[in-house]
Amino acid sequence: DEAELHRRIRAAKQTLGDRLVVLGHFYQRDEVVQHADFVGDSFQLANAALTRPDAEAIVFCGVHFMAETADILSRPDQHVVLPNLAAGCSMADMADEDSVETAWEELLDVLGETEPDGRASVVPVTYMNSSAALKAFCGRNGGIVCTSSNAATVLEWAFQRGRRVLFFPDQHLGRNTAKAMGIGLDAMPMWDPRRPLGGNTEEALRSASVILWHGFCSVHRRFSVAQIEQARAQHASVKVVVHPECPMPVVDAADAAGSTDFIRKYVAASQPGDVIAIGTEVNLVNRLAAEHPDRTIFCLDPVICPCSTMYRIHPGYLAWVLDGLVEGEVRNEIVVDAAVAADARVALERMLAALP
Ligand code: 13P
Ligand code: SF4
Image (tube, rainbow, N blue to C red; front, side, top):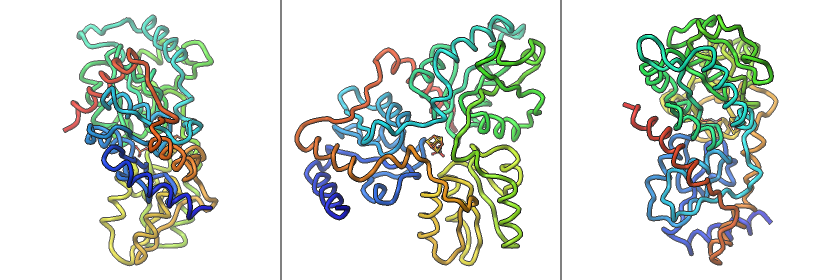
């Protein structure tokens, strides 16, 4: 039963002590988050992996690309464990390496490698929510990684080096960030990998500033302007805060937009009695509501909106991998190929160096 699982997890953690660190993303269910040594957004958790070089095992309660990133950034002798290997990310799966390589070749055919001013014609930027192979692609091709908490800083870095950006996999984060930087929608063509030139004319690609991959988050794309209007109709004083993976009209209609950690801080800075509607994964929203019972905090989507793959990390899997570690067996280890990891680390380190 559930109580027995929690006892097993606590006992294994106690036995393993400092040899173990458990990381939990904000979107994990409370039954899992209660066992995490660090809880954070994808950027904070990547850093948390770096702060525990003494730990033999990093158990990552999140999704596959996050565990890959922890493996890339951690020491070679540290084991990174994903409690359920089926915890992927549908957005990350929307950009596969072959399609991006093909897009890249087509783009360089049309645009050439460099501009008359010596900058690159196009710089690849991948959202953290992507495979290690795509981070490595960026590392090899003068590109960089961003997260939802630093996308604008990273795009500025890219525009110092190149005339254009190819941004993948999330069209919405790319569009929302570029728009906030003053880039017009006509300079943001979408790239559909099923069509030649991504479905664009050569002219459109030449005049582009940000070329957007067609990916999206199946959780965040469900939020709508109608939901915001309804929240405003029901609560005159409501403040609406959403994640930048939401579609642009939703971000435009909200009072604020930012990463999961931004949303957490936004709520922390509010006052007792405030009403806040949130457009992000429901586990985080419900936790924020429970932490602030003196405020009215609710999810914009009235139909419960969990990330189904984050949800695949169940306490039963956590107990199983921890029992394995106690017995000296590393279960569900995530190992990124050494050459891929080396290239991906270049793109991740460019991100860390670009930050203020
Ligand atoms: P952040 O944790 O960077 O806000 O990303 C949200 C998300 O969708 C993670 O999968
Ligand atoms: Fe992927 Fe969206 Fe789930 Fe994050 S919330 S893991 S982007 S599907």
